[in-house]
Amino acid sequence: ERVMTQSPATLSVSPGGRVALSCRASQTVSRNLAWYQQKPGQVPRLLIYGASTRATGIPARFSGSGSATEFTLTISTLQSEDFAIYYCQQYDTWPFTFGQGTKLEIK
Amino acid sequence: EVQLAESGGGLVQPGRSLRLSCVASGFTFGDYGMHWVRQAPGKGLEWVSGISWNSGSVGYADSVKGRFTISRDNANNSLYLQMNSLRLDDTAVYYCAKWGSGFGSWGQGTLVTVSS
Image (cartoon, rainbow over all chains, first blue to last red; front, side, top):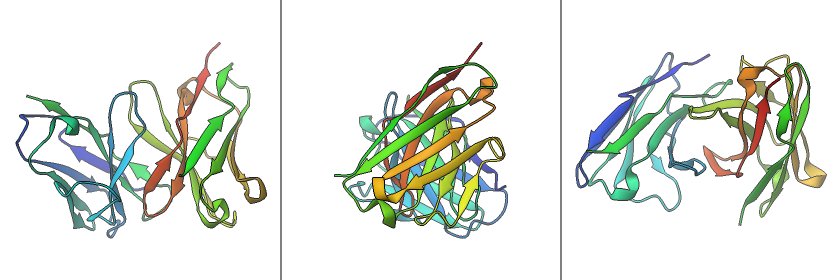
């Protein structure tokens, strides 16, 4: 099983700032990695797939990068609606696995 | 518009069984892999199980392997999760999700509570 580790667990940032969320895989997952955003009481929303491709309707301030075992989700110019929990997920090999999440909170 | 509607959740005692269903609409169900993802109260997302478009390939999380069985009925646009030998730590909201280079569509979830 590929273990996905996200860091940090919590990140406090001011609106308008820029953040980079990290996701590390215990073994290579190639570029078979997705990022999701989840707000309280809502279902997760797909942001990025293929490590760097934005899903339909996702604003350009969200960008993904990385390959193999190291991945980053960058959010430039944070908006109030971006404060949420972010999860990475590998889909290279079953069992698919999620990271434990990074909570982005307002500073 | 893609719609996924789960049902079948509820309160169940440890060791008992439950069967979840997910009815899909708004897309050609038989063309897509489908999955179950769960989220325990206040916790993160956990992938549970997945099934390919033709049921030829299935996968399970280690935590449910041997206890849960995924299946689908393409004629009726339905996905199922048979959950046996339920444990306290199976308590969660169970989502069905459509696969397409990421889980682009999710149902609203059904709550399964395992308690004596």
